[in-house]
Image 1 (cartoon, rainbow, N blue to C red):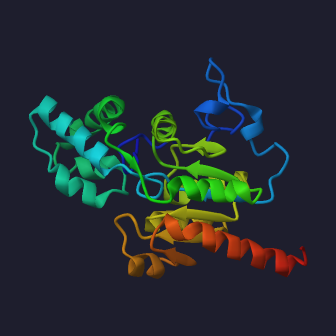
Image 2 (cartoon, rainbow, N blue to C red; image 1 turned 135 degrees about the horizontal axis):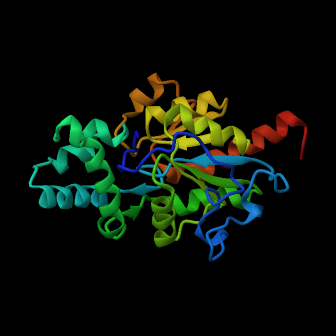
Amino acid sequence: MPTDRAGQSIRPSHTSPTADSTGNAGNADSAGHADPSASPASPAPRFTVGFDLDMTLIDSRPGIHAVYRALSAETGVWVDADLAVTRLGPPLEQELAHWFPDDQIQAMADRFRELYPAHAIDPTTALPGAREAITAVQALGGRAIVVTAKHEPNARLHLDTLGITPDAVIGWLWAEGKAEALREYGAYAYVGDHIGDVRGAHTAQALAVAVATGPCTPAELREAGADVVLDGLGAFPGWLRADRADTRGRDGRS
């Protein structure tokens, strides 16, 4: 099964947001059932913006580095963790193929996921402007969702630990696959750091808002077709306010 940039399995198909795949941890009851208020069937917000997670909202490189080191220590196989965290984005198996025989890759990916919570959560930090970007959407009456390729429970764990509070979290979707959730939630824009995020936004016919905080340069993001390229999330609230004001003007609304 393909995995995300943090080594978590990518779900082959998106489950309904009314199941426990939607909402952050605060939207689920003790049995793990999602609050239906987080679903697209709820009263429509004024607009929805999607966000990627790794290297868009959070800097997970130290955590992923620690998982690779733990995997190396456990297996006795050297993995250049310094190098690996410079090429986050493609499925984990592609990275593990540099270090393990083909017949061991899936087992190593599974073990990576098992090691992840104990090693990757504490070293990971919020990127500058991450919390403010989410609250900027919500302050304007919008809905902020996180659409990530990461194993969804680990995505929620990161967000809860760092105090980032989106309205919904959808995991196991990568690149063009992210369009499934973006369409379902009616996202008008998707914010990400990777050219795969640009492809996902455009597949969903959403604005591709790129932030140059990940492995892709501004030039690479523009070449991939990003509609907007920001240095980081610090510039996002201002861009959003201006874009929404322009949208209201075009629609003839005050």
